[in-house]
Structure formats: structure tokens, C-alpha cells
Image 1 (spheres, rainbow, N blue to C red):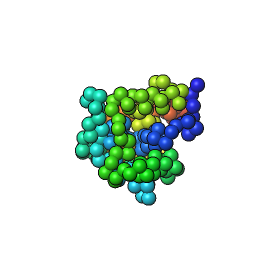
Image 2: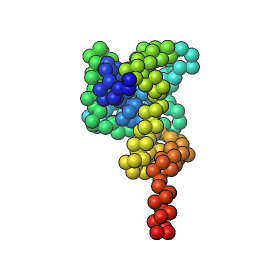
Image 3: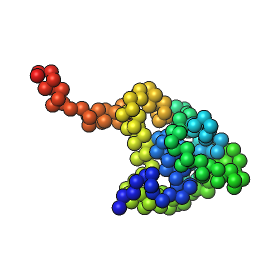
Length: 185
């Protein structure tokens, strides 16, 4: 049975990870690469400066993002601070320094187990981290965020990818019958 994102029984780490993806549209590797200093809870923003990749089972921190445009600062929705703050505070209480990872100790296999627990708690075995990114782009579109701003928020190098998403959404909401009736009515 599918659970609601806001009522799923996530622990603090899962909650923080899922709601960062949900509210910022970060790529999985960008979220895993966040350091405590990359979250500014006062200014409600997240800075993307590095990524964590898994070329094998070992996590590798790349001190650069996917592209130059991927280095960015994204607004953090105020309504999600209470989802993110408990894990952030827990990391600080555990002695994490500003340059330490928000989500430490991940290998590829640990991440897969972590993500599978999230899927199970949501009752969505097909769910990927990328789904949250697509959902974020969709929300930007329906909120009338400009293509230029959406590209910047998502860290794309150009407009091609976002145009494909937006074109798909335009096709879904466009009522050709009504438009033709209006033209010739």
C-alpha cells in the first residue's frame, strides 16, 4: 500500500534526504555530496558544490558538480525546514564539523539498502531519487517559474532537458478541442 510522503514513518536521516530531494530537485549524487556548511537554514538555501559518486561500491567525493552550471544555490522551502533540521542538528550533536558530509558513511550497497527502506516505507518499489527531480521540475512549471530560472535551479547546462519536460507538460494540459472550438466557434 502506498503511503503519503508527509506521513511515511521515516527516521531523521531518511526524512532529511527525501525532503531535500523533494523540495530542491537535487540529483541523488548532489544530495549525498552536501556538507553541513552547504545548508543555510537561516537563509533557507542549499548550495551545491560537490557530489558523491559510486564508480564501484566505494563512495568518491568529487569536489565539483556535474557541470559548471550545476554549482548553484537553491532555495529551501521554509515549510520543509522541520523535515531537515532534526538530522542536521543530530549531525552537529554528533560532533560533525561544517565541512563534514550531511549524509556520511555511504557506499553504493549502503545507499541501495537505505533507498530500499525509503521505497518500502512509501509502498513504492519503483521509486527512484530522480523521480523527485522530475516532480520538482513539474512543480516549477505549474508555478509559472520561467524556463531560465528552472534551468538555473535544476543546474542544467542548457534549456534542452527542461524544454522536453515542459513540452511534455504543455501537451498534457493543452486542450486542443477547446482551442479549435474557440477559433472557429
